[in-house]
Image (tube, rainbow, N blue to C red):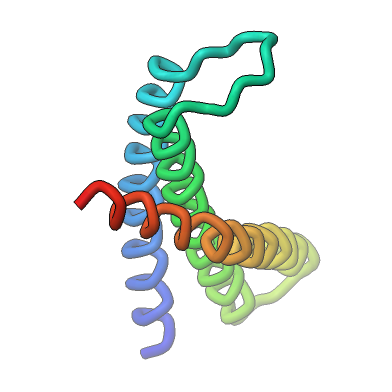
Length: 124
């Protein structure tokens, strides 16, 4: 039963990861079209800041989804009946990468979510 739940988690997390990755790329494209990369130290325009915050926000969500997926994949590896060195090594690598992505994604989400919500509140 737990195998099915973990597989379902992997599929859902992979789907969210792909979706948020596309959203990140669309805002990155929008940001690079708007942004004026000059050597002067002018304050960035409002639309430029909003696109940057949205890009970072969706990038954080991508990292959270990717971290969840990799952590669930590591748990699946640990539940194999015939554990050997290679399986444990792959599981530990997935677990380390997954936890790192999850922690950094949450950290960046907590940084950029208030900025995105403040930007959207100003627009409405």
